[in-house]
Image (cartoon, rainbow, N blue to C red; front, side, top):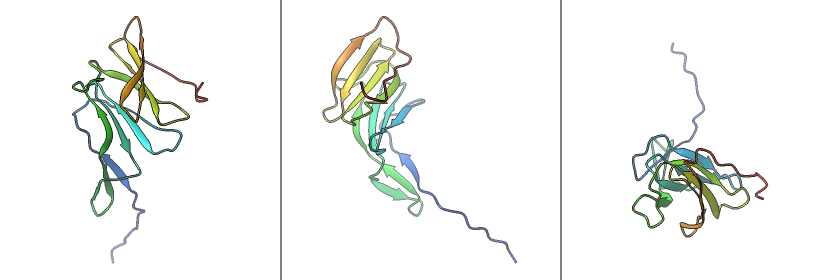
Length: 135
């Protein structure tokens, strides 16, 4: 007689990206745990709502999500060089920050996909951090 073991099925999430990107930089917001912010070396920037799947595959085990915001090089505010860091503003998913190899740190409005503030640095920006208190 065969010994059958049961295993717990877990939902895995598969995100559809619009551009082929290498080594994405990702962070889930700490406020709601709902939005995934993803930046990539091809200078693309994408936000997904990971609680609202667009479609399911594999008998419902794999959820596919459509981007709710996508900025690439063709976008009016698109970055031209690789994104090194993406971080959410700690207290509000309406703002996030990107740093890039183009010597800039940008503060973005999530709702309008517009850059609110642009800080020009002296060189490539490899790391950006923000207080978890949001101040």
